[in-house]
Length: 326
Figure 1 (cartoon, rainbow, N blue to C red):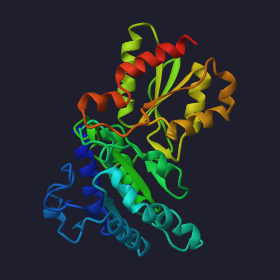
Figure 2: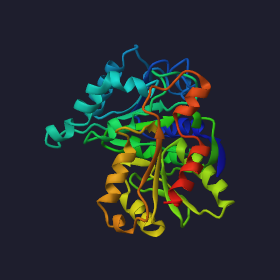
Figure 3: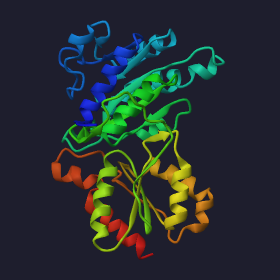
């Protein structure tokens, strides 16, 4: 095991897959000489050349469209969209083409496409570069949606995504790129659809995604000092979703809180609520389910307002205490 950053883990996963499979290649804006907006692909064009690390024009529709076509003829493209907000510019190519081609052609074609994209707030990038759009893509049948929270998971899940024959939308949080963690120096993958209990507890289950996993764990540590036992679940993938782990946890604790950075209205938290309400866990609930989520506003540019717009550790601590009083 070695300790590396989340960003390095992403780079290593792609480098190893490029070395393993000649059909894998990268496409995106400024990913070549410049190394991408967050430096993730820096140096890769020198190692693999411009045919396999392809700088593209500034057209998300063209980038993803070319990726879909390449995937259909046997390649395994990894497409980088500079900010997840810009996925909307390729919504037809992702939602109507990549997601549906296998089904509409009776299984005769497949689209092994990975769309990597940095999401979330915290960098002062304002409303058009700071959104969390995972629920939008989780709603579309035919797409797999991944949200890793650690260096270990981001490397293993990205390898799984690249080897998958289905289109995968792969969300990487900007603030996690510098976060360090232990990662094996051998080849490994992390399976889709298997959540992880990051912290075991008995008083309440907290389901959190991406960077909110870390804030939930920090909140759980603070609450432990007050003899409040919090169980934290990281789903890792939203599609497929490991409902079984969530249900078992709620049956044990009797309470559920979902923490997401995305705005509350129409967020993936609502899907988790529905899954639990429709399951055997519903009869074990001792209190209503709580959602701790971003405000229903565009992300502000102001640093203080930006922080106030999405859940922080203190918000989770406060919400857990309020939940336990019910």
